[in-house]
Every structure is written in structure tokens, then in C-alpha cells.
Image 1 (cartoon, rainbow, N blue to C red):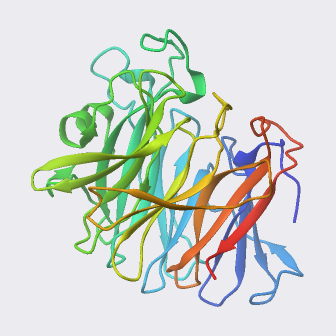
Image 2: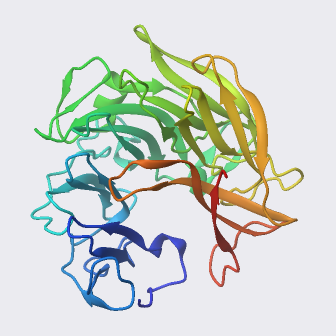
Length: 362
């Protein structure tokens, strides 16, 4: 399809289909202005010929496409770099995107105390059950690259802290906290701390959670957080019970970059696909380990490991993601993930020598 500017996984392609079943690819989308590439298939569901398509926005980083039940498509993304803002666009058909919305979240806007001027954020999103809103989980990024006093070292790419939650109404563009109180846009760090905080982790580092709305459309998170050592981490299951956020430990892992996916089984049990410990591998920069399946039949209160999904001998995995139909619905027990030959971490620059894996429970 084309080349990217640098051998960096941030530039990886994102794929979606429009209402006419033409395929779209967006790639080379990270940091730079007007450098992303948007292609559309010449024929519906045909990957043999492609043609250029208009830029979706001047700056797009971490694009996430979602398909609503009524056929609308949502593009959620960050503009500019670490200190940029997050926003979104809605298309009626996945082909015509129009003008972007105004900034939604901008943590360093109007800083009030020292440190807030260096605050950014990283986000996870999931559609609500009606397809009219987005559940948004946020973690704070600290751009200061300071020595973390708990770990007594620079943590650099791991400089992520706390967990916050907001809900976006796609019909009106308004945002709300878990109590349903309307929030001013763009949301800055001060307002997030006062009205949207799920967990203040102090100096303990974290990363973005996976999100699964429960049958009543309340958000549930599977959240990786470090303890008193960088390689002593846990996945926490977090949900709202009454007027408080509750959290329960699921299992240990050894890196906050280890990712997960939550879904329901056919009988209503919770299933977590997650990256467990890579025994003896210590602090791999972008994580990696065994792909494990954990299950809870008690609303997330108690978890048990039910198995592992095997990769080739000696390989490590990360980033399990659901495979979606054209309607946007995830296929049950079907994952796309990447893997590479261990025991070392995946390289930070290419060539990567990794592979993508498609897994489906037979």
C-alpha cells in the first residue's frame, strides 16, 4: 500500500469499511502535520486496487474507529504530540467525515498548580450499548521525565498515572462524569481530578485499561498497575458499585504494557484475555508474555485461570484485540494479536521479525 516515514509501530495501518463496503486504510498517522495517508479500495471488499482519499484531519495519533448500530462511524484520536488534545469525528457512513469536533480533553489547559502544565493523557474508548455514547477511560501522562521517587529512577515511557472516567454523548457532544454531571469542554487535569477520578495511584505507574460495559451499560475496566517495583504489576478489575468504584485483583503480571481484552461468555460470565508473566524476562520495554484466559462468574469478585492460548514454542505475545464484523460487533472468542520470538523484548525500531496471529476458539 505504501511506505511509512520511520520503522515505528505507531505508524501501523488502521482498517475500516464504509456503508458501501469500500475498505479504507489510514497509516503513517503519528505526531506530524498533514503526513497521514488515507486510501480507499477501488471496489467494494476488494484489496487489489487502491486510490488516494482525502486527509481526515491535519494531525492524527492513535486513531480508533468504531461502528455504531445505526451505521455511523466514529473516529477518536489525539491531535499533535504528548501534550496535544483528544477529539473525535462522526461520519454517517464511514466515507464522509466533515469537520472535526472541538477539543474534548486537554489535560494541560489552564494549569493551576505546578506540574499541570506538563500533563497529557492516554485513552481507551468503547461504545455504549445503544451506540449513542462513548465510555472513555483516561490515564495521566507526565511529560517532565523526572525521577520517580517510588522507583528511584527515570521511568520515561512508563510515566503514566491514575485512572479517570468520562462519558461522551455522541448526539450532543457533551461529556459527563459517572454521576451524570455535565463537564466543561475541554476537560483539563484539575477538573478530572475533582470530578472524574477512579483511582489515584500516587507514584505507581499504570497504563490504559480495556473496557466492557455491563448489561446496565455501566463501565467495567481491566487495568494494569504496578506495585512497589516496576516488574511487580497486577491486573485489576474495576467497576462501579453503588456510589463508589471498587477494584479486585485478577492476577499478577510483570509490565504495565501488558494488554488485555474483556468480553462476556454466552452464559453471562466475564472472560479476560490478558498477558501474564513472562517468567524471568523482567522489564521488557513494551511488555510481552503468555496469553492467558481468566474467568469470573461472580461479577468480577473472584477470578480463576482457565487456560493459555498457545503460540509457537519460545514466543511472546501482546495486544490481544477483538475481531469485529462490519456491523462493529465483536466476534466471540476471536482475537488478533502480535507475537515475536523471545526471550528478549520486541525491538523499538525495525526490522521487527514478529508475526500477527488470528485466534478463534473452535
